[in-house]
Image (cartoon, rainbow, N blue to C red; front, side):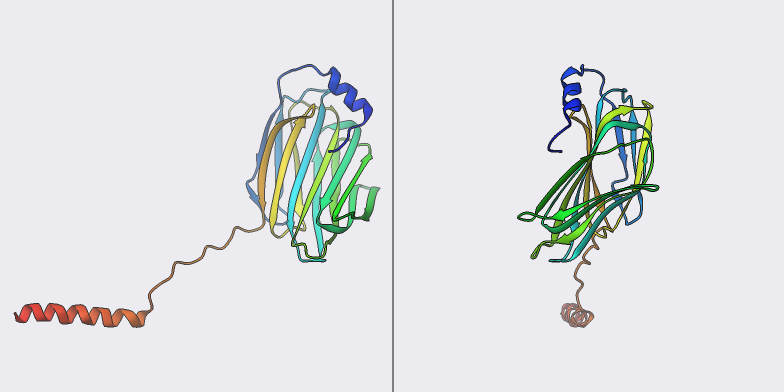
Length: 226
């Protein structure tokens, strides 16, 4: 998040220190299409809340990439909401926010491999069909780094659950950070894709075992003859 609206900045200056929210994020690793859950407790109304998703997506040079969160369930609203996205190691970029028939898209080309966009939008409580970052990687890039943030003044239940599914990433990683009044409350790294296949330990060929056993038998036989 590079900038905040003036109203949110003013609220941060007026915010008083209180008890920080409690956060728990599960699981540690997900496959394509699996669900991430964020349990939040003691989140007061009126604070500036931010959900920050930072991803590392493996790709091929000039190949397409996609980092999609689908069926994102927001249990509370974010007044004076803002969505911010940034991408690195890209050539073309598109941000999509869809909730029912409401669709917001922002796209553009990268400058020296980087792209940033932000927009003030209404972030109401409910389920968002898709919030995604897609495009093409820069020539020579084998990894694309993405950052997506939803920010606003929180209104709703103090205890709630945010959930979403991740689509389009077969291998990579994602870092989820929760901020309250621009202060980090909790952060967690989640692996995307299947775990690495362990390399089997080298085994001795069967053909080399027989001569060794024969040598041992011959030595033992010699001792017995003595």
